[in-house]
Length: 157
Image 1 (cartoon, helix red, strand yellow):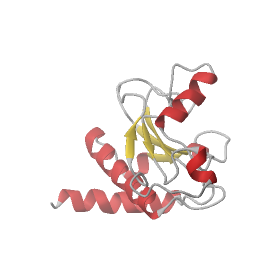
Image 2 (cartoon, one colour):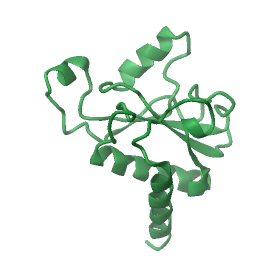
Image 3 (tube, one colour):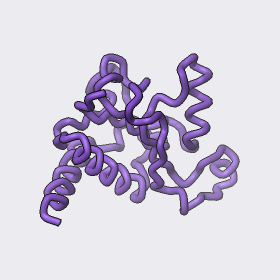
């Protein structure tokens, strides 16, 4: 599978982890989680969120979803040429945590380097399909700018 783009998503829920998203996608009739990478927030379960018991050790952790060499199920028309990255959270209600954003930039830099991509090859789901995903509080232009900076720094290390 030739990767040409990274597509950024949000889970549109305040809590969750890879296993939860996998169950959701299976319930939709898919072959499992559609995203390749999942960036966790501080609330892995409903109970942790409802009781306001954050797990700071999980906030910003990058977890593997679908294997990178397998086509995704995250953006119709782009699944065979892209990797899907999901930030857990409702980014129409608030911004990602600082740790999540740093992890997102780091993941994008590493994936761009691995697949020979540029920051301009990073898209929000809403830039490719009619949706609000990844929410209004994830500044995609700023993300591309921060990834470009990260790519330049990586060249000089």
